[in-house]
Length: 326
Image 1 (cartoon, rainbow, N blue to C red):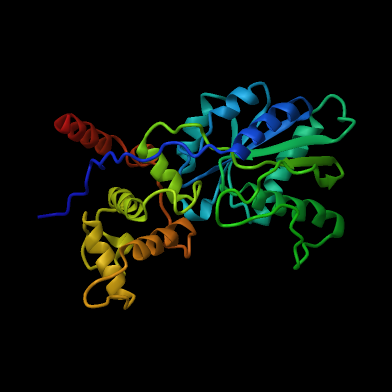
Image 2 (spheres, rainbow, N blue to C red):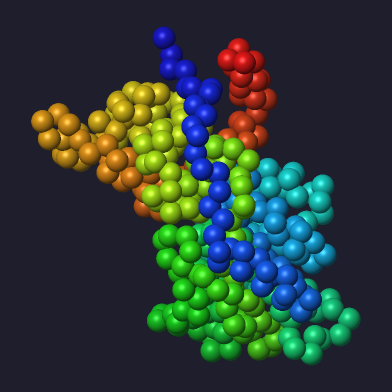
């Protein structure tokens, strides 16, 4: 009998809010700075493009022109045709980028320069950008790359020893305060504010929170590692039911997270009397995908995006299964 991936994931009673004091402070600061901002750049993680969309920005920056950047393209299997379909109806500009890529940073700078050139009069204080997004989607990394590329044209080279103008890290919350203005280019005069990631007061459901945990928008300890690992297994099987996403540990696909964790521990030689550290192994495996340790760890963590990518057949099967369970 061929392997059938799960269509339903258990509805765990997870905490659906991780909205902190510095998130509110940052949101208030965005509102104060809005009048002097010429262009907003919103960064979303392309592995969870729906879950890392923050509707709070629509309220605070409603009248500002916005460009959406989907980061971490080297870790995502999302298709440009999907992004085009999503943004065409809104007539909104978007780009698919790697925040560390000098080429992608140059594309962003070229877009901003074009915006500058189209202004009826040069802004007296320079064209001012604001980079916004959920926590840990790559905003500060992008600012550093933009700064390095923006000034390389002046120096005719990109320095091998890059100076960071914005703090970066693997966990959310590294940037706690909105930065002072950072100059990206002198000709034309382009400046940017790097802002802290802002979480939603409440996400819509547990699957959204799990998607956000898998891309690192919440701290590793916020959601149980085994539940995270189980949700990751569930999503990977939907994207590829052959089990190739974890074939280095098992020769066949499985819906049982405990079977997979056991085999991961066995492969890593961490079994002791046929037992293993369940939380440790689950954290290790999810971190491989969260941090994109190699090119093989590419995927999507948004169920909605997976359904959109895989077409009508998968959507129909999901609908039938949900009706059956209901």
